Image (cartoon, rainbow, N blue to C red):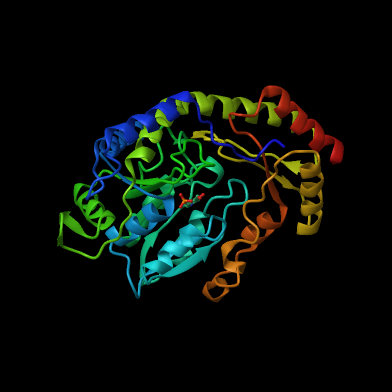
Length: 366
Ligand SMILES: Cc1ncc(COP(=O)(O)O)c(C=O)c1O
């Protein structure tokens, strides 16, 4: 089976973990051990942000960013429904209401015009998601947010290595949230980070991460235990070094798939619009005009051939049993995309020969 995604772990990561175990420092009271600090510095430098605050998941990063931005009960937060559950779940955890808006069918990211229409006097923040590793239209998101005094929290969980008009994710946001889950472009097993250029927000984030403490046993606000362990940070440091190589291989595989599949008129291939750099976290194609059952039939057949095809995301969040009650706007493009998309393996473990085989199987089955 060629999996949809697979962590790329080598000797270096194993040695880094052993070193931490031998050091005896597995974590620290405020979550600011030597490995965590170094990882925060290096990752923040990589995304050209002033501050990085490492946590134990991307979900924790989103929750903490919303809390630091002051999102709370009575507020509304605008976000796409075509994303992983955590983007909406963390809004609800603050007591605020998620307001789902539709996507641009070309990029699968939030439709900026729909943001404008969804703003009310209760809107506090907007959470664009860089879906599949392609940046949302961040300049436009920023413009709309500034018009209405909204905080921008970019969900960059899938976008390590992406760029938007030469800028890394987070450049146009107040806060950017990253995930280092095992499937991601770089991993710490579980893990996450918030990056920001705002000193005050960074200070709040550090407090929230560890029980609202500035100093140990001196809580100044409500917090959590969202600390990243030292072992994870040590893995992250190695993975960050390897990331450029990983990204190159993802890009190579995406290119092979696009070259081979361009003749398939039944498919809409992923785009990398002018000025955007894809991180190729997922190579997602769309089965033109298909119902979900037709797409699922093709996905099943591909899996039987040993290709780990994923469907991201079906159903979209607003159609999940728990989240249905939050639907406010029509989400035509979201529902359509959700019925038609599927993602082919593009991760660095996929060899050019395998990428060719994947494309060949798709063409045959079509
Ligand atoms: C778009 C998006 N947001 C948030 C998350 C949550 O990250 P984590 O799984 O690290 O909690 C993920 C990843 O799983 C994601 O893909």
